[in-house]
Length: 139
Image (cartoon, rainbow, N blue to C red):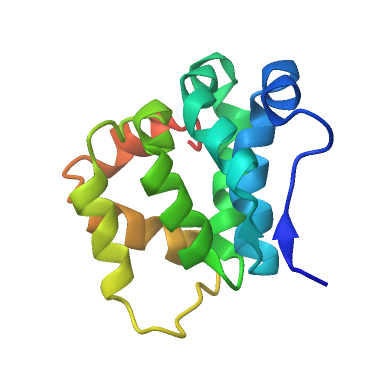
């Protein structure tokens, strides 16, 4: 049990088939606490621009699940390292602000989607929450 997440077959082929698998990789990491296998992560990082082609609704589901997962810090850290956030609604160039979420207590987990998204609004210093959430098609 190496506790490593690895794409089946050739990682870049899997992510090209369905770019949402990139977000799922981050979410699985957040859910299981496993490390991403280096070649898998390299392909995820290289292909993050494909996330622009994924519907906001599908991306929202995966990101929401990531935030609610017990190891959300791991998944978010990989998202930040890969710069995947640049391809999410209203989050381009938000690395420094996203890092504010790591200021929360080490063992902190979100109890609800509302709490997680409120923390995200705080971290990103969003002034117009309604507009931001609408860009994620949550309202």
